[in-house]
Length: 314
Image 1 (cartoon, helix red, strand yellow):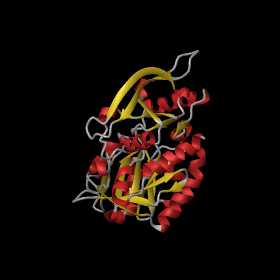
Image 2 (image 1 turned 135 degrees about the horizontal axis):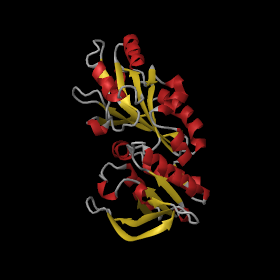
Image 3 (image 1 turned 180 degrees about the vertical axis):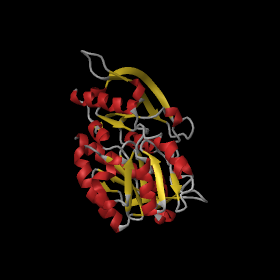
């Protein structure tokens, strides 16, 4: 099977920890052909199928020069056995447009994972609203007054933009309310931008757990991303320490319940963020932590994903 990965530039991959690389490696190991492109390479013209400038590659097994490019060609997306959408956020207008192009490719016969319509309908911060029974106190608003009232009620809060990733733009405000006004101004832009506000969860000291769901089923290990020093964010991109651990029974139950709902909608791969036993985000664009879990536990997450992908296209 030819598998096309839509991702960030290959030259930017840090292969020792990149989950898309792990998927590619496992796919090639099984005899599948690997190709790649970026969203900017995708185009459509009336009377033709959705196409992309595609790089056909082979993985070398080397740490630095990790791939060789055998050819570059303009090809219809419908000609691939599977398309794996792995572009990192932000979920901006261009990302949104890319999903529409991929939906058109689906109408032409392409099989895309995660399903483009599902990507549009489950923005990563807001998808938790459907599962309010599993989350802590949360507010989404454009009103500065709403934020101040939420702070007055909960005392210790986290504020974040709806389009960030890797912990970008996350602030904690304690009971004294120090800098709350300035933070609201920076994130809310005088009511022009919606933000998310959540009650601070002290269990963050034990890690912001990434729980992966593949084909509707939880992976048996998660990665607890533990904040370091005075940092409030556990994200690995923000310097958090990743510690793999067996999935807690309560987290497994949460992941199973969410997976049963979301997998039938075309979300083959989901990454929950759980602090304590409260879901804080549902990531569907490019969930990570495959390699960290494998390196520490031997649980081959990439193999589980390719298993599910092969089954989904069968």
